[in-house]
Image (cartoon, rainbow, N blue to C red):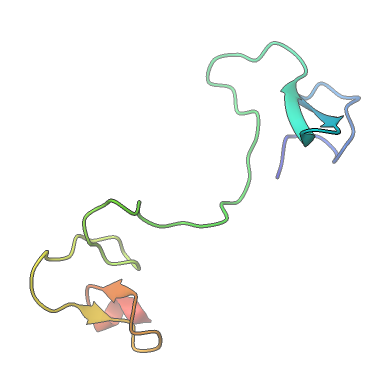
Length: 89
């Protein structure tokens, strides 16, 4: 997680600061007025993929897959839907 400051260091002009609570644990609060559209936190996602309620799609390139008929599956797990063998590599 990058909130444009040193970890746990609230001394600079960061938009956020880390607070602690016995009930909530660690959490972020605004340390100053935040402008509309300003990036205040940036982190790598834990999971990337389509929503669970989306239409079927290739999990490699995100192309839509047909609703009916057979689909290409990952040869290793046999679960992940793919649009072609090219998307498996």
